[in-house]
Image (cartoon, rainbow, N blue to C red):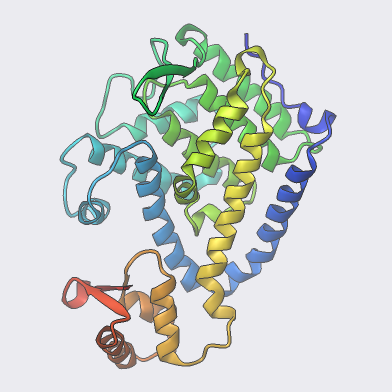
Length: 348
């Protein structure tokens, strides 16, 4: 039977490479707080972008996709979901909105995890929404020639409630131990959650939502401005490799958490690096208004509207923004998407 115990994080030496990654994340978290406080309008815009990317990316990891146009319409409420994928996308939106806006109100508890799971699946409304699995599940691996094999056998269904209870109690014990670093503890708990695989569906998405919840509750809120899930999706081969390495021998309590811990920390560093890319224009000496508009569009991962530019650069007149957008289109630098007030612009 699996025993949940995170005391190794204080009783055993931490690998040097993990210490280096941890130190980097902690320094970046502290250093970027001033930047966030200095540019509230910019970070409000980054939050909107991050939420959309998180919804798209976390679902895409599980093969849940729809068109860009449908995503836009679904998220602004102008259309209703038409199929399973769109139901799942809207469910993720509802949960991530709660976590982004009210994370302090939610605890890492069985009751809350079940409630989040029920909301995640609330549009599709299967009978197992908000309930632990009733039958055993396995994690399959498909070889290049299409042969399937069992890569991992999660906790049996009849043992899942007890395993979840023990995991959460172990987390609470470690959370309250000042000698255990929370940035090391969080990925351990997420790995255990994934290894238990407590639900019939939605385990991967729930793991990423719970990662955000625990990060926010511990003062690491980079995921509000740069999508944590998008960085996982961009490097998902690394993610699955780290998950495989750390879950090997999990059932007999001899697994190594550090591959997954290290990947978790690297993902956070990548988020901060992406933040620096998007905000570098603010700390540069670019004063030319046209250049600022051009760089803003080039650095954005999603199309930007005229209103977005007005909010980001309140010192640039509306007529100037209109003029520059036309010039950049004529120069073949940017492309216009849509018409009239709903038009957006992206780099070519």
